[in-house]
Amino acid sequence: MSSYNRIAAVKTTVAVLRHLADQKQPVSGQDVARALGLPHGTVMCHLVTLEDERLVRSVGGAWELDMGLALFWARKKSQLQGQIARAADELNQLEV
Image (cartoon, rainbow, N blue to C red; front, side, top):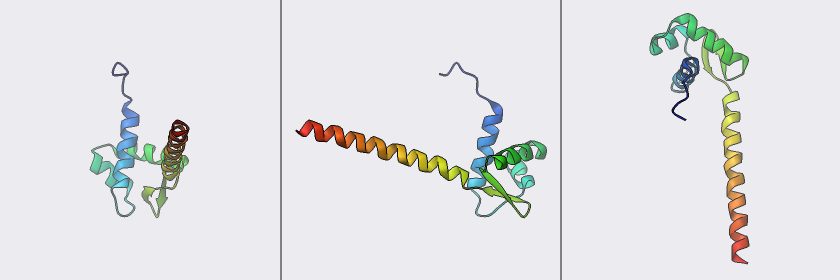
């Protein structure tokens, strides 16, 4: 897999999301840009695109994570619970 190129825009998006996740309250796009060392326009393009996907939301001109990200967590949790249930079934079959 290491022969594939990394996409800089995706890394920027993840950096924006991680920065917002580390904040205790909504922060301005300018604050995000300053913290990440990125142009304000770049950060705002990422933020409004993430907002379209309900991954972040604007609150009084500042930004925070939105509930769309919780769906990823919930789906991963459900997948793990399914794996546990399948493994338990296999163990039960071995005990017969």
